[in-house]
Image (cartoon, rainbow, N blue to C red; front, side, top):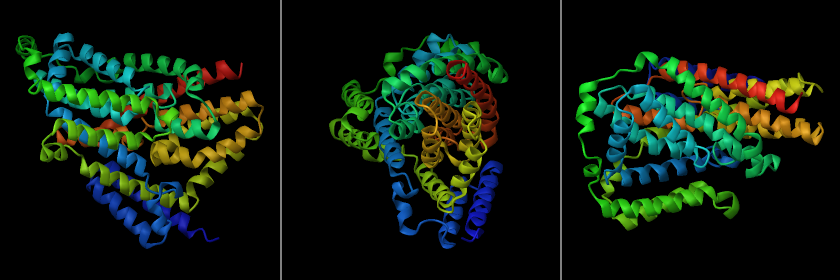
Length: 430
């Protein structure tokens, strides 16, 4: 088989990634151009790229995003985000680090039970609003929230998309993830809260005069339509229950989100133009292009070859294998988006784990899960939640650049990956 397709796919992906990183061109235009070029050269699987099971566009992700964007757009019309923003500002006394801890903890508590995209889409509007009221930049808080979400989401089967893929492939239950992943996720989350105090220290600005104005505000007055809010929260609660029970009912979270969006529109009779205006269409198109680009790498065997090369170097040294899965996944997943990366690597990990005893094999799966989850913080395009937050920030007039996000993400990934590696060594190999 000729090597040129793999070389061509790698070059196109690398050049596109460079353009995205340098931000010299619009990132949506870059991924669409790269995806189109891969299609013209026959590097993607033809029309089958529209089917996620064939390493193509993951419509579950697109549908989940669309459904949650509509839900958030409807809820926003009630004024509840303004209410929560005023409440958060008052509770934190306007102190920047205290505010960051409050928002990050709220994010961290929600992330294990909701997917990361849902969590950041609910918290981001509150963050942008409270920062506006306090006269401070929202970017550091948004970045901290998405980093925290990717860490805390590792705790459960449903908290991070890679976990769902791994749980299905390895036959691991919700309780298995709680027992094995939750302890290290809690430790990493605590370490991140402390790290944030240092990482974002230059961004912490206290404006007593702005807080004085917020302190006198009546938060409840921000809610413009209490009846609409009540109906919205009822539907949102049902959606959250549906998310939590999806492994029991078998109903995909994307279906839950779309049905929930439709139900919310019906019961609230929300203004169609307003909630559709809240949909991040550029973000959805960016995902479409990115999925096609990754499909090109998968179809030409690039990702599989990298995985096989990494695993062949392991031999029968299982701790070395676990180390490779943690650090290798943390690096590779950061460049390829951790969802398609996990889906591609899962069969390879399954083959490796099958050669070990059951206990060691499971340790390899946890190593892979930790590496894949933590890779989501590696770059601005490594996880769905990152891309969504960048889109929301740009819409709010407070854009976050690729490197502004990535420089914090790299530091966070290094720290949390080292903690994860130490945890795996102490728990499974000593």
